[in-house]
Image (cartoon, rainbow, N blue to C red; front, side):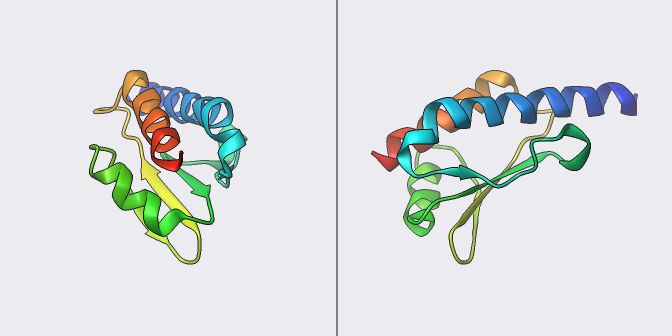
Length: 99
């Protein structure tokens, strides 16, 4: 049902934010997505001065997102298809791409 799906989505996006805080914090990334569960959907937006380079670099490694001007990276996480392992891989890939 929708309540279960929403709970799974919030768990997934909350985990993505935790991964980003842990793995990307010292690499110039800033989480732009609201941290309050009731204020966010199923996507995560990050800010980084090298967003234009990082989005295609991550995509080459299977982490597909999009860039929004001037410095935003946006990634969607669908609770029906994505897992927490996918979320961790996305954050790890971004960290590796930024180094």
